[in-house]
Length: 211
Length: 55
Image (cartoon, rainbow over all chains, first blue to last red; front, side, top):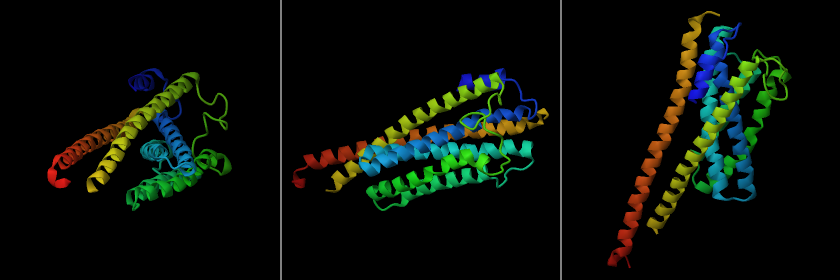
């Protein structure tokens, strides 16, 4: 993370059009990437749980959903902070922004569903269904700017990106940020799974003590 | 665009780092509380098993 910060603030050139505020891009977009990756893990874990209801799949999906929601929250806060000086508004109901907000709301609902479900089994089953349906929004967000007219900047990476749309130094720092944020996601996921295992052990111990 | 946008850049970075630290703190506190509770329950179960009135 320190190396990433050094690259963002000391090494990468300042964007000629947007100025220093463009540097928000180096953690706004990687946060979105991690959010999408986390929700993909939720999607895979949820399918695996419905096919074979093992607690480890539910634990994986639940942990990834929590981390994905954290990163999407960062996306939804840093985006308007960047937009205010560049677009002159904090928020606009453009397709990409709206679908991103919907994605965040879906996974907030996922976490609330888990919190309020009467039993652990019901929480796991209902949230698995929501985790699968919710992921449908991820490709919609990516293709929103192409499918509809959108104010959001064009894609710089991925299948719809235009080649050479980013200077080599900027592309390098961007990819480095993506890698750093991905490693951070893996570390958060490991820690969250450890907490989840402790929660499961406690639930077992409570059941044993009530017998 | 001029450097007056530095405040926006600072705000965006501050929010991101605050979110990361808050999450790590939340996980650490939750982990500590869970382990303490597990230990307490374990002791309780051991005491109950050792007590003759429980049989």
